[in-house]
Image (cartoon, rainbow, N blue to C red; front, side, top):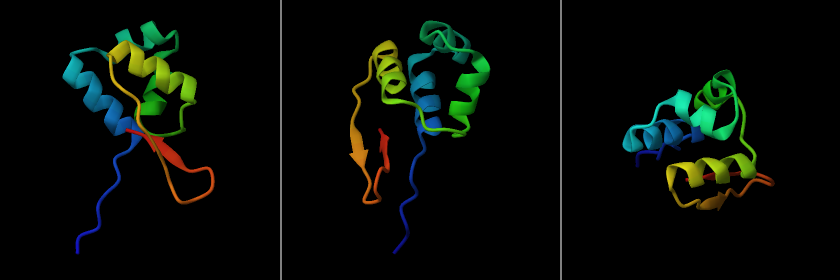
Length: 78
């Protein structure tokens, strides 16, 4: 049986931007963060705070679904 690959936050964010036709420059500006910070998020260099995820979802008009992993403290949005 083939193991299901997990989709990272950065990958999901890039896909959402593509679907909405928004540039990373515009998203960074709307979020009030630097492009370098957003670039690190795209490359999964850190896990964003829930507040940042919520703001991204509001700007892009997406619903947040939080999935808690079995490991203590683990989770991701999708």
